[in-house]
Length: 414
Image (tube, rainbow, N blue to C red; front, top):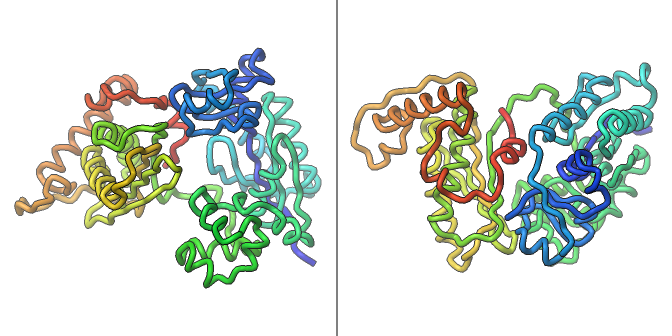
């Protein structure tokens, strides 16, 4: 007999839009979008018209002329997201939060106190609805991947418990895009070979998937299609990367757009790296084009970096190389920066002035140390007077369609 299903995945439904409807009852039942130039989040009523996060405001209004845009109450998002995750913590200490509005919980050790996993999930849903006024969907399964899929199937505002003896019959009937890691590009490649369900994907050989999607993605999806997911919950996991992204709507792929956006993202990421004294050696950028196809590029450095301008320059070089490889792409819809391979214990290492061509990008060079010192001074001012007290001029002058507060919520925290 299979082991019991004790892993819960709890996911607040259309979280940002649901909070707005909670705060303003006149918005309930109406199609709303958080944002303006870009849709940051959409209510279920808006999603029914095809409105999605990351879409330009113009495109969203064409799909849904009665769409109501709201600015966003970011402090309330954080407050209510924290409160919902705290409800899970009232049942078990084994809670792994993966974003502001979703988390895993393992309830194997507390069923003698609170009932079956299904009972616990139902109680969590009832408490979140009663105490916070928000809908939350919960999936219960033996593995993290299947629990997350179950919570998606449960939406909106539902509960799905996957019987351990019927996992594959449940999983294989579902659309392949519900799998963790299947984005628009992967889905398009699978569509091209007639794979629409997880069951159809499971019938492909790992070799075929590897040839189609690459070794890492092919191997992972082949395992997940058969519910082979050995990952355990990590309640107090140490962050392995820090990242930030900016949804741009539809903007021309010019340095006038790209440079200030990357500097802003680098400022966000590098500030967090410095606050934790955890610079990183690998810098990765992601560029998403108008057709939603994303391309990533990365560079691994000899010395770890946490200096804003250096990180921005490195990211700009990677984006330039990406655009050079895709000369026909004229429009970009998203830029992202992440830093990984973070140092656990770090001190800035000074370098001899050797006159190398990349001295300006080396953290321990004379220029690098000066920039790091300037960043530390900025950090102190912001700590005392707030983030907006000081910043980079080119960023301040650039028009940003996504509020900083929303970015802060969406970014992975160290």
